[in-house]
Amino acid sequence: MTKTKTGFGWFMGLVLVLGALALVLRPTPPSTTPDPAALAEVREATTGGAQTLEDILRRQQGLPIDDSFRRSQLDDGTAAGMAQQLGTLGGESDSEVWRALRYGYDGVEVSAGGPVARVLMQDGGMTWLQFREGPLVTYGGGLLLGTIGLLVIFYLLRGRVQLDYEKTGRTVTRFQFIERFAHWMLAGSFILLGLTGLLVLMGRLFIAPVFGLEANALILTVSKFVHNNVSWAFMLALVMVFFMWVWHNIPNRTDITWFAQAGGIVGSSHPPAKKFNGGQKIIFWSVILLGGSISVSGLSLLFPYELPLFAKTFAVLNGIGVPGWLGMGAFPVDLAPQEEMQFAQLWHAIVSFVLMAIIIAHIYIGSVGMEGAYDAMGSGEVDEAWAAQHHSIWLEEIKAKRAESGTASGSSAAPAE
Image (cartoon, rainbow, N blue to C red; front, top):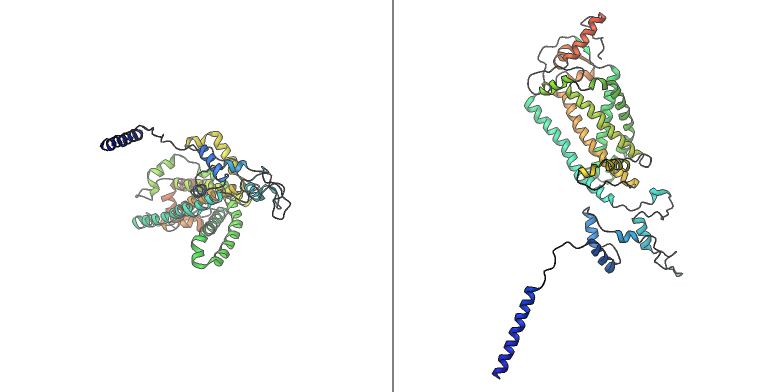
């Protein structure tokens, strides 16, 4: 009996030792990421290629998903036709029809007709909406509020830029009527466009919770009507301003001195300048370039099917190699009209936010920030003391022309350039 127990004990010990050796010596599986193709095969085998919870979560996070299998099932005719009431028609099931609509299959026919009507489902719409109501509103609104806050602080620290000398009572014509008309048409239309654009962008987030959906809908309907129609006045004024002032806004050496002395806004020096100083030239080209970009994207939004922009732009950028410079993949060039509108709307809003911040600073300088600045666009006449302090080279040119024409020095009838 003792020998039997001893033999059994040796046997169990041997089993335990061999088991331990098997655990220690077993190969360690490689710590690599599962092959996406293998995962796709597993998903196809287990779900028939249907959308999984993982796919839904990744799409909500804006991450790519492997939908190649579902795309490959378009128009496969795998559903057998049946004569019964609940049977499929034409050898296609409901899932196949919806899959074709989901992926924009060319064989889909709708009563409205045309390629636009076939796009009934579009994933990019969620990405666009999340960016529009998230980063766009947050950073765009922060830019405007931050600009206003900095100007308030600057005014409290610097105060208003005053004239160093008493006014002479003699004036010169700074801007003719047609120039002031174009300026105010540009300014007034831009303010209306900015306000109505902000209402359309932020109305659902800020107006609807306070005043209700009906009030928000009414406000946005009116805003959209104003925005779309006032845009033509903005574009007309933009063209007028460009041709009237472009030659005065070509950069030159005097701008270097102006910037070196901070335009006299910071400090007590007043650098010489022609009709437009360095700061005004920045405003001019910002308005022309950014305003032009806003206008083009706005036209694309008004006529999205006739004036698509981004597919062609992305193709050019891909050809140049821009995505590679940024460490990105190629930009998409096969865009549905809805995607074109989404890209155009985001670009339209981003550039508008930047230009609004610049114009807020321009309004500050032209109103409370500098004594006598408003007169240039108000009456068009500025005192010689103001002209000598801020645009001395331009004033000397005006006086030289007066002397050549024999005009009295005290006359205000001599036009500016």
